[in-house]
Image (cartoon, rainbow, N blue to C red; front, top):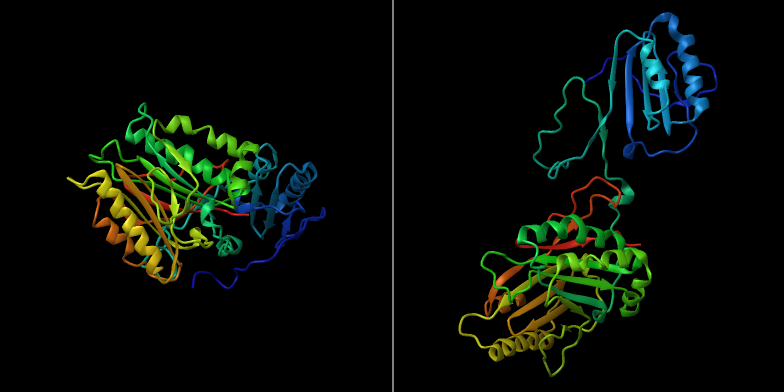
Length: 390
């Protein structure tokens, strides 16, 4: 639909000191990831008498071995050349200098926007003359579904955080996204972190007695969490807490809820392992309604939790709860192919709601060393960060 019959593509062969027209060559006989490198591309007129000059320059590029990859093809009256990294090598400029007419491009990394799959309503890429692209594919190994890694319900650190007064709400959210949550998500999976659920409640007119942030951090077991502090990656992340949080912040491992309910103690309601990262998670942050005493508030929370334990709803994988006199935080996890039940709605109807929503699955788009703004944080929000688990 686009090309003339003369157009074609070939696999390159290793260059061995003989340059022939209409043959594609690679100069570096090593594997390389071109998609994630700095690529330079030359399209130029090839004068008839320049073949010996091209061969000499190409021999030099290959002999110096300063580039990570190089592919060249000389046609009847043109040359095309691609180079991966190795900007200090003079070969690229030498090839370009042989021609009066030339186009030099650095292919721009192109990420497909959300909603640009085969079945989406999408006009396609905007392409204009002179464009050169480095298509950023999602490769097959990156699309593989993570294997289930269920952990016991007493292996989750239940966090309630209060903002450091030195930071405004906007500064707090920016620090969380750009540094704290991003580094924690990248540094800790290899230390045994299996799932991570950070959330921000509605901030407008929120009383200071309600946490400014909540989180669940699922570990292989409690011993793995404590052993994590022997690792530099975990210590580096943990020591950021003082920059973000103030008085009242804390975390603990939950215990099974039985006949007694105490404030300031996390509880799990379902005593079986689950992989929360692969499930559908709902989260609620609530406070007493006007006229509701603390005793009445804590009692209704206990009654709600006890009812869940007695009914044990179908497809409910896990349930976690933490409460103080001034707030309650609760999470429910359902199997990934099921629709959540109405259990959390029932609690929401009894309290003043500051967050009530499903945790959105968020795939980390970059690593520690990439140019990246971090995990977006806004009020209100709840994320199910899709960790790259070992």
